[in-house]
Structure formats: C-alpha cells, structure tokens
Length: 137
Image 1 (tube, rainbow, N blue to C red):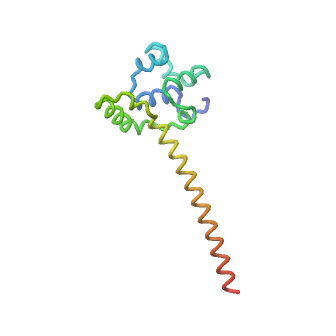
Image 2: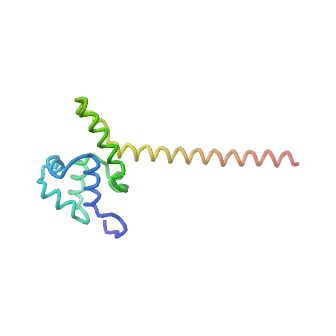
Image 3: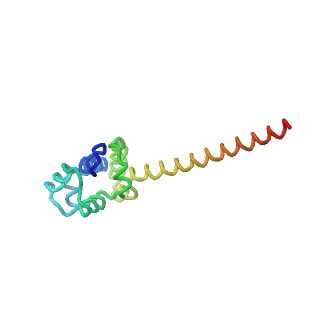
C-alpha cells in the first residue's frame, strides 16, 4: 500500500488482531511465527504478497475485509461474544463466524437492497408521472 492516505497494513493487522481478542503471541502461534515477528509485521507500512496471505489466513479474514477495515469499533461486541461462548464451555462458538466480516457482508447486502428500493421508487415516480400526464390530456 503506497497510498499515504491509507492506513499502514501493520496498524490494520494489529487492530483486527485486537478486535478478535488475540495477543501477538497467539497470532504468532497461528502463523507459526514468534511474537517478535508479529510485532515487526505490525510496524510495517506494507507486506509482501506472501506475508499478506499469511496474515489473512491467521486472522481468518478475507482481503476485502482487511482492505475496508476502518478501525476497531466492533471489538467490544466481538469480545463479548467470545467471552459468552467460553463462559458456557462452548469454545467452538467463537469460530462459527467472523463477526466483523459478517457485519461488512450484511452492510453490502443492505447497500444492494437500498439500491433496488431506490430504483423501484424511481420507477414508481415515472409511472405516476405518466398517469398524471394521461389525466391532464
């Protein structure tokens, strides 16, 4: 990422890691790397393609989610869900789906639904305008 207006990849990696409740050591374990390596990655401006793929796999997120990440505002919800699952001995619960990624997926569906609704309203306006034009003749 060479665009200076975009957030550094390492910062995004750290924010996503924190939002899903992992520390550097835990993420390093998922990656087969040391905590120091994770720390170094989180300080980088950009990743090589191989590093990026490794990070995406370890964080269990897809590229579009990573690239659209705007901050860790959802971290409280993610932690609550994970803690709730652990409290009931349901450790696989936290891995059923990725909450932030699911939110972005639903956001995309909402955008498409809104666009279809807007198109239907435009068609209705055109139809009503034709009715008014026919009545005035």
